[in-house]
Amino acid sequence: MTQRQQHRRRHGAGVAAGVLCVCLAGSGCAQNGAAAEDSRGSDAVKVVRDAADALVGARSAKARTSMEMATGGTRVTIRGEGVYDFRERVGRLKVLLPQDPAGAVPHRPIMELLAPGALFMKNRGAGVPADKWVRVDTRSLSDGNLVTGGATDPFVAAEVLRGARTAKYVGEEDVAGTAVRHYRGTADLDAAARGASGGNREALAAAAKGFATDQVPYDVYLDDAGRIRKVRHRFSFVNGQQKDAVAVASTTLLYDFGAPVDVRLPDGDDIYAGKIAER
Image (tube, rainbow, N blue to C red; front, side, top):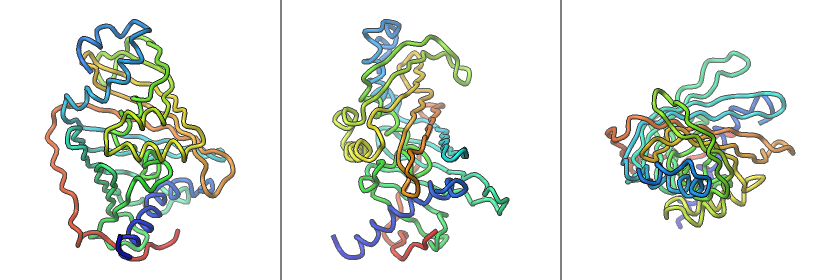
C-alpha cells in the first residue's frame, strides 16, 4: 500500500465517523414456498436468514433509510433515500443530516455511493472540495459502516439477518400498502459475518468486535416472496467521547423492486486525498 493510499484510508475513516459526530454534537458526540410456511415457529429462523437471498432474486429496489440515535437525553435522526442493486452490491443514497440544534444553516445533503468494502461520500464538508469524493474502506471501521456513515447499507442490513439466532412470528401487518409477515428476534453478528457474501464478511466481522455487544435485536417485515419490505436493527456502541453506550435504531424500507439502478463509482482523480479538517 502506497503512502498516499494509507493517507486516504486513514482520513477517510475519520470522515465517515464524522457523519455520526455531527449528529451527536449537541449531546457530546427467499423463496415463495418458504414464505408460505413462515407461520410455523420452527421455520421462522430459516425464513429470516433467507431474506437476503430473496433480495438478490429481486435484483434491485428503491430504499429509504432512517437512523435514530439517543445519548445524553438527546435524540437525532438521519434520513436517506436512493436505490440499490442487490446483485451488483452497489447503491446510491442521498443522506439528510438534521438541522443544527443552534438553528444554523441546514447541512447540504451528503451523497453516498455504496460498494462491497467501500463507502464514497460527497458534500461531506470538513475541508473536502465540493467536486471531490472521499473513499472509506468500510473494513477499517469498528462498526463495519452499519452506523458511522449515517445510513446502513441495505444489503448489509439484510445480511445481518443471516446471523438470526431467534425469530418469533408476530403476525400479519401492512407496510406501505403491502401485506407482510412480521418477525422479531436477535441476530448474532459473528454468525452473520460467517454467512455473509464476500464483500460484507469483513465489515460484519469488524462490527462484531466493535459494538458494545454482538447481539442485535431486529424486527423484519417480509412480503409473500420473502423479500424485506422493512427491517429495523437496534445497535449499541461506545462513542469515543462518552463512556456510556449510544443506542442506535437503523430502519430500512425497500419498495419498487426491479427499479433501474445506475451507479458509477468515482475515478481515482475524483477522490480526495488531502487533509480532512478536524471537527
